[in-house]
Image (cartoon, rainbow, N blue to C red; front, side, top):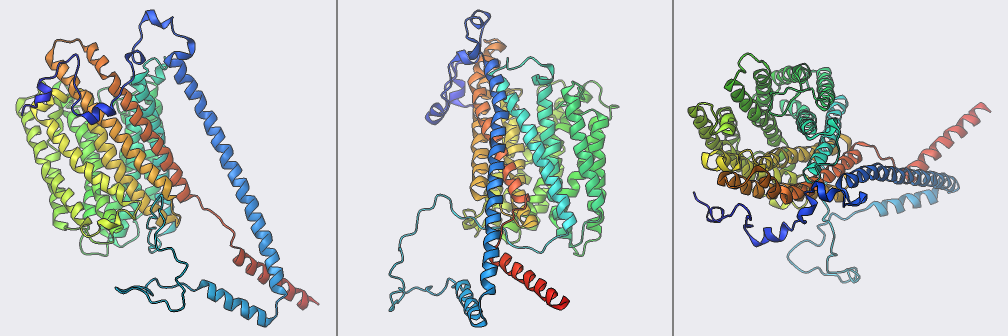
Length: 626
C-alpha cells in the first residue's frame, strides 16, 4: 500500500506527519550535533561536549554522597525518635503501676471504646439518613480532592516457605542490580549518539558498551527476574513445595557469575564476534546454560510431584521456554553448521528465538498466573491459552530469517519467514483477547491497584509491538525499515514495553506478600509514568526518523553521512527518553529497598506492657529470694 505523505517526501527536508509531532519534536540547533576542525578551537573549554559530560559524571557521585548523607540523617532522626518513644513507654509503664484495679478496668474500657470501628454500612441504603441527635452536623458533604488515589494493598496470603521466599528475593534483588547496571550503560551509550566525543577510552567505546548493555539486561535483569517469579509460580500451581532449594541457589550463582565474567570480557573486547549481540564467549555462556538445565530439572520434578490432576498453563509456558532456550543456545554456539550463509541463517534463528521462545514464552506463563491473581478471578479461557501456546511454538520458530529479506539466502526461506511472521497474529490475538477478557467486569480495579497498570501496559504492547514485528516482515516495509533505527525502536517496544512492564507488575504483586511491606504508592506511580513516557519519547522519534532514513537510502541521491545528520535530532529524543527510563529504574530500585528492608517502629503501648511485665517478673524474683 502506498502512503501518500511518504511518497511525496523530499529526502533533504522530511516533513512531520502531524501537528502534534511537530510540537513535540522541537529540536536543538545543528551546532549541538556536529563540529568541524575549524570551530573546535573557537569553542571555550567549558562548552565542549566531552568536558560537559565529564563534569556531569563527576557531579553524579557528589549527588550520590549528598543522598547518602540525607539517608544517614534520616536514620539518625528515626533512631532518636525511637529512643524517645521507648522513654515514653518507660514513663507510661511507671504510671500504670500507680493505678488501682478500678482505674485499670476503666482504662481497659476506654481502650475498647477507642478500638471500636463502624462496619461502614450503617448509613447504607437508597434513603437519606435520619439524624435526630445531630451527630452528622459537622460532616463535610463534599469529598476532599486527593493528589493520589489510595491503592489497594496486597491481600494476605498463606505464607510460603521462608527459605523459598529468601531465594526468590535474592533472584529479584540481583535482577534489580543488573537492571540498574545494564541501563546505566545504555544511558551512556544513548548519550554518545548526541555527543560522540564524550570519551576516547577503548573500554567505553560504543562497540564494547552496546553488547554490555544488551547482555546485562537480557541475562542479568530479565532472565533472573523471570526465574525468580517462576520459582514462586511453579510450586504454587502444583500445590507442592519446590523440589530442591539448593538447585535454585546454584542457578542463581551460575547466572550471576556468567553475567559478571561476561561483562568484564565484553569490555575487554573478548566476545563471540559472529553473534548477533556480540554475546559472551561459549565458556561463559555455558555457565548460564548449566543454570538453565538445573532449573529445568528442578521445575520438571516439582510438576511431576504435583497434587493437582492438570498441569496449569503457566507451567506449560515456562518449562517449554527453558527447553527451547537450551536448544537455541546449542544451535547458536556449536560451530559445525555455521559456514557462509549457514551462519547468517543460524544467527537469525538464535536472535529471534531468544526473544520469542525465552523471554516472551516464559513471561506469558507468568502473566497467566499473576494477572488472574491480581484480579482475584480465573483466566478467561484456558483453551485460548493453549491455542496461543501451540501456535506460538509453530509460527515463531520459522521467522528468524525475516531479518535477512533481499539477502543472498534462498528466496523460499525468506518467504517462509514472512508467512510465519503473518501467522504470529494467531497467538498474539488469542493471547491478548484472553488477557483483556479476564479484565472484563474488573476494569474498576485498575485505578485502585499499583500492579494492574503495569500488566495493562504490557498487554497493550504485547499486541501492538508483536504485530508491528509482523508488519516489518513484509518485503515492502522491510525494504524501508530494516537496518534503520526503526528496528531499535521495535526491540525496545517489545523487550521493554512487554517484558519489563510484566516483570514489574509481577514483582510489585509478589514481594509485598513475601515481606509484608508495601512500596510507597507515590514512588510506584512515579516509576510507572516515567518508564512509560520515557519509552514513548524513545521509540516514536526513532520510528519516525528510521522511516525517513530508509526512504533517503532508497532515493539514492544522498550520501550515507546525510542520513546520519538527519537522525541527529531523533537521537536527541532517544537520549531524553532513555534518561527518563533510566531514572525510573532508580526509583524502582528504591521501591525494592522499601519492600525488602524491614522497617522497625516502636509501639508505645506494647513496649510499656512488655516493660511492665518484665519489671513485675523481676519483683517476684526479688520477693522469692528474700
